[in-house]
Every structure is written in structure tokens, then in C-alpha cells.
Length: 200
Image (tube, rainbow, N blue to C red; front, side, top):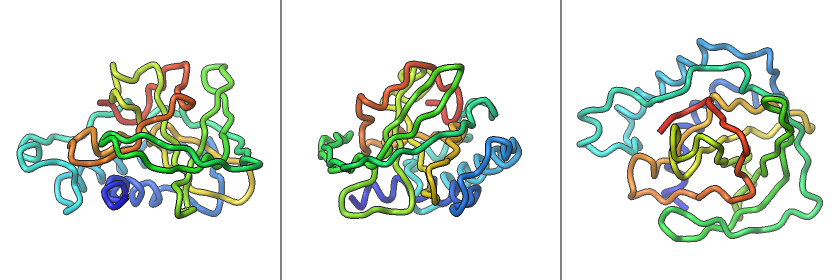
């Protein structure tokens, strides 16, 4: 539990800086420079933060994380539908220590003319201020990390959200196997390539 919290600390802090938690946002709010600056801040945090997942050996050669270019086509309006009876599932982890997660609801949206959905989760024992939305897609294992990527979606009033895949990020276990990271449930595998966000 503690290790997973560390996995999200840097990314969550940077993501919340760029988001308004009391509004769902808008697809017209896309700002390429904001994304570039957030990525630069994350690189600096990886270099200097005490919670950086990089080992000393990797820090010596670290020149920055790899990303797809910012793309407004991957900022999409989504409708959130809460589960009528949220159920608890067992989410496997990279360390083989299963965690309990609550399937809180589902986001429905369109990309490339396809109607898609992703389940939103919270972790048992705490509702939190955001939904955990892990996913895999057609880039997984090739252009992006083989175990999938994550989105943290701040909760807002109402059912209208914006999902920005430009801020999709790798779990810390992509950089260091001492971390325990939730694996993406099969139900959150997207049938298209999401060429946005962090690369492997």
C-alpha cells in the first residue's frame, strides 16, 4: 500500500497542478505548452526528488522520459456512469501481492470514430479525490510499457468529464522492480492504439 502511494506521488501532484478539480474541463482547454512544461517538471522531479523511482545507476544516464507529441485528438469528452452496486475486485500486481479495488463506474467516450469505455476504480479502504483508470491498448508492449499505463482522473460534480491521454503515464515498476504496481485488468484493454502520453 505504501509503495503504491509512492508510485503515484510525483505524477499525481504534477497532474493536479494542471487541472481544475471543481470542473470537468473542456476539450478546447488543450494547451501544448502546458503539457511540455508538465513533462519537464516531471523529468526534474525524477532527477532530484527523494521519491524518484530511478536507481543511482540510472540517474547517472537519465536524459528525460520519452513521450508521444502532445495531440489534441487524444483529449476527449467522456460520460461517467457510477456503478449501481460498486463491486470489489482483486487487482493483481507486479509483485504478485493482490490488492482489492472497487469498480466505481465506467467512462464512455469516442476516439477515432470508435465508441470506447474504460472502467474507473478506487482502492478499497479509501475513496480518494480521483479515479484510477489503468489501460492497455494496441501500442502496449511495442511503443509503450508492456504492462500498460495509468490515468488519474480527478473527481468532479456531475457526469461530464474530459479524459486527456496526453498525461497517461507509466507505473513506477517500469523503472524499478522494487515497486509493486497494479496490473491492468483485461476489461480495460482498448482495441485501438493510443499514441499519446508516455512511451516505454
